[in-house]
Image 1 (cartoon, rainbow, N blue to C red):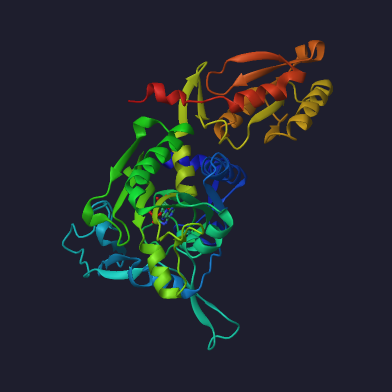
Image 2: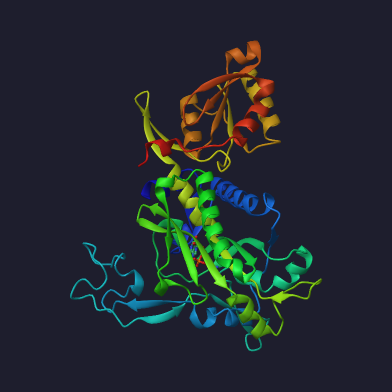
Length: 449
Ligand code: GAP
């Protein structure tokens, strides 16, 4: 994790937030490559959920909803963590994480492990951030920043069902920010105060809920593998009955082997009819499916795959990170799936001061940038420029050299194998397109057990 934190800062993926003011715990800002990578993660998710299917539509609901939404959903009453305080060092811990947390004492100990460590009884601490809507303090209304995107989908069920003109099974997908007052810091962007979620609520006839639950667990696991996460580092863990949320009859976590151990990457829950029923009762609007032809009506059950964009990005970074020695020199390389890589190709004139090479390279760069995220770099030794691109995970390096000036060909260097092929300059755009569209498997998969 330390290596990813350091590379993220050095190369401009992720910065600690408010750093010049000493930082703010569990908050991060995303730099240029972080934004591009995060956008690619969201694009691949939306493709798989919406573009490649004809049974799911998109939605973008508000972050601030009517406060009754959160009363009906159970979040006001029950979205809380049990917290304990240490009377000695004043640190606060999640009671259910005491086994894995470290207290402030040196050498580091688990909370409660030493005699001085005097822990209070657990108290429930609501995770929702509160704010006020309204110009005046006295007449304003208390509202919450949404702690999940899901509720915005449930309260729009009627609107969407009408325009989607589909009978269940059908789904509604949403990508957007969520906020939680998490007190457990650490582990970089794994758990933060604000983050983005990619959630999809799939509405199904009640009798089909189990079947669709199993379908979505398999489908979501396959998505992580499709985009390069090693299968050896993924597993599905069904929740024990005493772990289930109040709304769920079955939940499975897709877990990744993070540096701190197996932890939740994505959750897939069978939420039954809990949410639609709660909102029907609280709002007085019937959220049910009615067949206009036969008059048949039922409250659909909901299967929900829910994944954090930032946690997914962290997983891709961790899984892609590699170090090797090439020609007696160390190389750090991010073996990201080409479709996730922030930059697809780097155009590099071999000699940065050679006017003819620079002109050719800029011509190729201008052509490619209309289609792909590409970079031009003529600054410094070619080896250093390659290393920089390797560290941000650029899959293809395009070098313009003496031979290009003679026969209009360029070399394409593959980030992972370091193999080089020579191509006519006019064929580069199509070749990059072919390479990006091809199936891809992490070369680390072959090595991992
Ligand atoms: N609607 C269901 C729901 O929100 P969740 O397990 O609390 O379920 C879903 O969250 C996913 O959102 C998690 O699997 C994780 O990827 C991500 N997530 C949750 N809390 C997060 C946090 N504080 N920071 C970053 N990602 C988080």
